Length: 107
Image 1 (cartoon, helix red, strand yellow):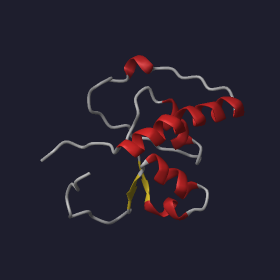
Image 2: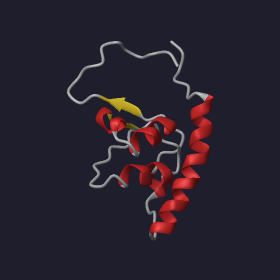
Image 3: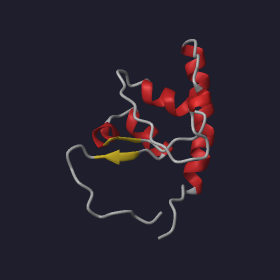
């Protein structure tokens, strides 16, 4: 089985989206990051985030030191403003309560 590869169009989308979102967040408020020294750069790990606002996930995605793969609730993809942004970044939809028995899919 081949390793997971991010398609080129998603790499390009993310290369544009992350700085744009950083700029937006810097305009909207003061952003201060602490704890970067605790990120295990270059090794696999899981970021488990419990958020209280729709702004929290894009904030994490924009400012995380590495480019994270993001999963999100499938129902959010149906929302007008959020769905297109999630698809542009390549967020992986998760159907809560359902099982994915297909296994890994080729890129």
